[in-house]
Length: 126
Image 1 (cartoon, one colour):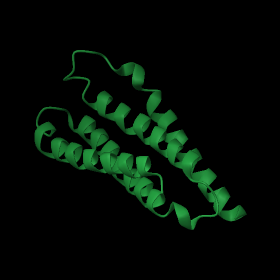
Image 2: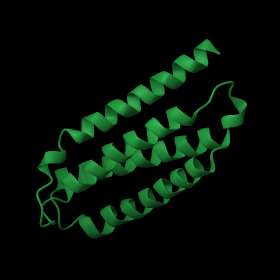
Image 3: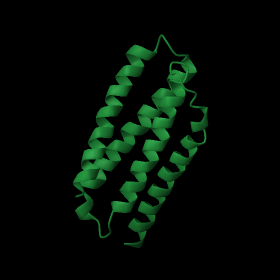
Image 4: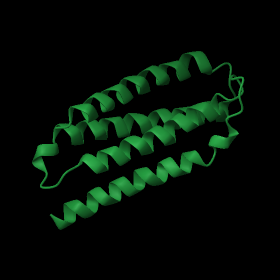
């Protein structure tokens, strides 16, 4: 088990709960519905991915291959994906324009997909 990934997954999980509550209670009346829906997508993906990172980290000894690179890719992917969505969703409330982050979201999603494909391929090979 990589302790750092357990810690990171736990932090992501905790932040998803906090951000989910923030979105449901503080943002619902101050940002447009489409932006709130996007924000909630970021929270949902972060929650599921945090759970996956936690589970894989805790059970890593049961695999015949190292999960370090896979979990690292998952961590990078979800960070890029969700946090770019958060900033884009909140852009009307922030003093800076975060439109430049638009292409970052799909890159984060692609990194997540690649990490899961690598995991599946390693499972099949072993």
